[in-house]
Amino acid sequence: MAEFKASFSGAAPAPELAAPLAALWWSAKGGWDEAHRIVQDQPTADAAWVHAYLHRVEGDIGNAGYWYRRAGKPAAAGSLETEWERITSALLGAGSA
Image (cartoon, rainbow, N blue to C red; front, top):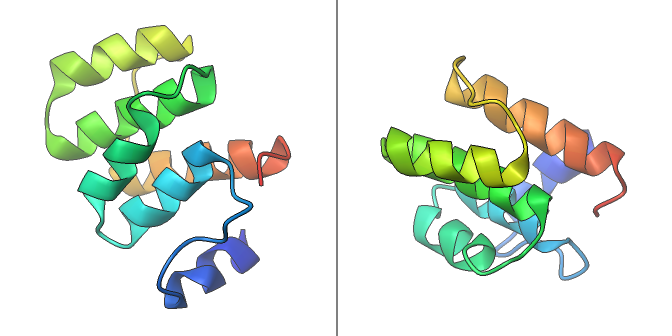
């Protein structure tokens, strides 16, 4: 996680990052549009989970709920920061980098 966060000083995420992690990278940098573009057409459950998070950030809870269901995850209720950490930790731990 520390290495991932340290990469925020760069201009773009590492090219080897899987799409969901690249989207989380952009989200952390304030690049919602870029993050959404990356995951919106990805067919994986991990991408759907990040997509749900992004719609929650946007404030579109109804759309977020759809994507949580697609991801097979419960809708998050805590802070956005906590959710970002949880998703990122899960994806980094799953070897998605």
